[in-house]
Structure formats: C-alpha cells, structure tokens
Image 1 (cartoon, rainbow, N blue to C red):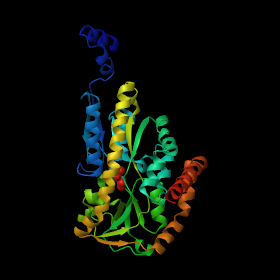
Image 2: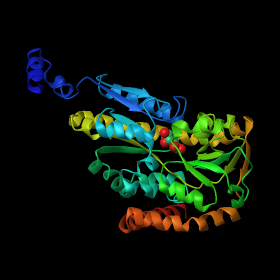
Image 3: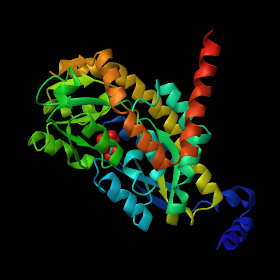
Image 4: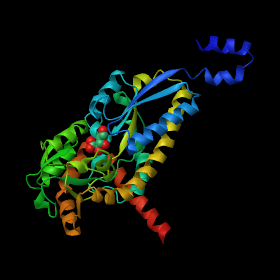
Length: 340
Ligand code: TK8
C-alpha cells in the first residue's frame, strides 16, 4: 500500500514530499477526558488536537470528548484496552487496578512543589512507572498536572482531624485513597468522578478532595460550602494511547502524537498553575468558606499517614520506592545548591 502511494506520487513528481506523508494516514482519534471542556484538561486537549492537526497536515484528526461522555476514567481505560477508543487523559490513581506501580503517585505529601513533581515525573522514575503500562496493553505518553488536592465538604469547616469524623467523603477508586481517608477518620466512599457532582448535590456524599482548578471548573462551589487547604497529595494525570491502535501507527504518526503531547503538557502545566493561583479567591467570591489546616494538624495528618506510605512501598516494590526517594533527595539537593 505504501509502495503504491510512493510510486504514484513519484510519477506526479512529488516523490520526497509524499514519502513522509505516505507514512501518515487519514485517521480519526477519539480522545476522552473527564472534566468539562472549560477546564485545564479541556483547554490542553484542544491545544493537543490543534498540534496533532498541524503536524500531520490535517490527516490525524483528534476528536475530543469531554465531561466523561465516553465514560469514567476506568471505563475509558477498558475501551482503550479493547481498542474501542484510541486515546484519553485521566488520573494515574484510577489506573492502579491495571498497573499497581501507579500507586506511587498517590503517596501523601510526596512532593513539596509542582516543580519537584515535574522533575520526577519527566525523569527516569516517571518513565519507569509509565513503561509498566506497555505490558498491560496501554501506552503512556506524558504526565499532565492535576495538582495538589484539597478538601471540600458541605457539613463543617475542617480545622482539626477530628472534624473529619463521620464525614462521607468521596475518594478516587483506589485503595491508597480509601485507606488514607479511613485512617484519618472520614467515612471514605470510592466513586467515579463522573458521578461526583450529583452525589454531592443529592448529599449522597458530604465532601470530596480535588485541586482548586477542578473545584472551580466542575462548579463544586455550588454544592460545597467549606474548603480546607490541605495540599495532602499531588496526583497527576496521564495521557494514554490504546496499544492496539498504537501498533497500527507508523513511526512518523507516533512521533507526531508524542511531540504534540509534550507541547500540550507544557502548556497545560503553565495554564493549571496560573489558574490555581487565582482560583482560591474566585472560589471565595463564589461563597465558599476557606480555611487552611494549621501546621500542627498537617503534622498530625502526615504522622497518621505513615502507615499508608509503608503499604504503598510494599505494593509498588521496594526497588521502585527507593529509586523514587533517591531521585527526590537528589532533586532537593540540586535545588538547595542552585539557590545557595
Ligand atoms: C477526571 C478525574 C479527576 C480526578 C478525580 O476524570 O477523580 O477526582 O481528580 O481529575 O481523573
């Protein structure tokens, strides 16, 4: 097929130009995500689609589906595995059922800053975890920022850990989150993000935890009165491709998807950070009552979650856990040296 295209193209005198484009076929790529179109996830997906179009002369067409219209994170992962959907972006936390090593990103208080997260996620440890997907039928391209997570609820301001007692708190479908919040005394309920707004509205659950950006773009302020700044975990998003689809792509097509995903990642992180910087005051303007968890309480929270850390280390394997701790120590040492 390719040879024929080349031959005809050469007769037309366009041999060189069409050698590359013959490696790009006309394809439609369904790209699903869970948040609204008007969100950091939606904006970066739009940019990704534009970049893919530009780099492929319009031959590779990304069709974005926001608002979980193709299903929750877990449902989309299954569709990618089966080959019924080509691409998605979603939380690494929801992938733990397929790749247990992904739980490493759910470690409470793992990163001290977003920049530190970039260094680790884009470095060898991030790649090592991403490569685990391949044995399971998925291809990981890049990590995007979801952000540091904070608590919201409709019952009361959370000023001490005891205030969490009995709060029905939605958590992502993953044992680390379930155990973390159970340990802290909440009544943790695992649930897909796509069901969350309605569950909050009908008071099936009292609260949830997500970054400022998501609390804003998903309009949780309409159904949640209290926001407590905890920054308890940074858990990223990851851009995934169905391996069944990937296997059919040429090298040129794969390179285009990766290049566009990197461009969109860099845009997404900047956009997310800019939005996060103003989101808290916007949420206050919308009526949310915000309080910051005091440093003593944060220390208690850290202390209580040490047990969870131990079980994460066991679940992901000590080698990976130690590589991550070492990479973090190096990143921190490098940082303090450069700021000296
Ligand atoms: C979107 C989810 C979301 C995540 C969650 O599909 O479930 O709370 O933070 O971003 O992946």
